[in-house]
Length: 173
Image 1 (tube, rainbow, N blue to C red):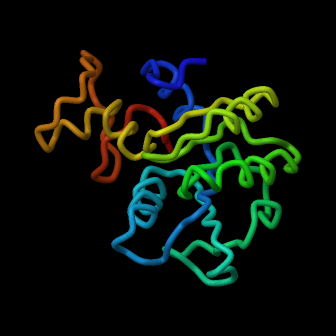
Image 2 (cartoon, helix red, strand yellow):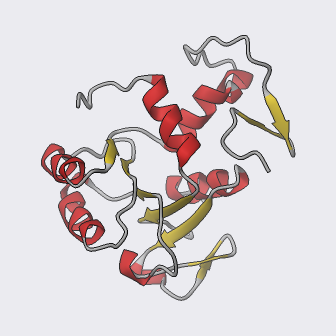
Image 3 (cartoon, rainbow, N blue to C red):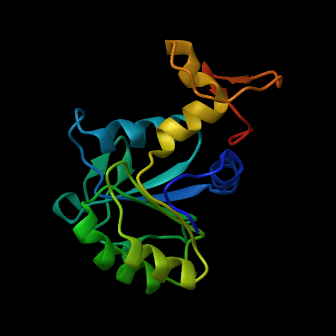
């Protein structure tokens, strides 16, 4: 797969199919990007499990923090990696020990490791690199346009309003 650009249908398909997310590198510091991405995804109805060995057993935004992916109490659909590119092979090793495997490995902005991505894809997982699910969700829902940013997505579809947040259909409860 070409990881230099992603079709909106590919990203939208992922965001529509995922319900549970493990966020590797989640931070309790409210000025860190992982904190506000975690907060955003929770607000959109995703079940997010923070992974951070330095804060294991504590809580971030009311969610218990786990030391490792294997410590999670239930299977997950996606692993969102908020670690440097050099840490990705180790995270992929941990992911490959999960049973069942998640559907998706997502690497945050600035995070890319083509060899690790190839291993995840060979195991049957979808991979996204150098993207943020918060930004992609906002782009596809039209929400990012509220601030005057051109998302490049045109739609005649009426947005779904839910508790003050716009949704492109991901969390319809």
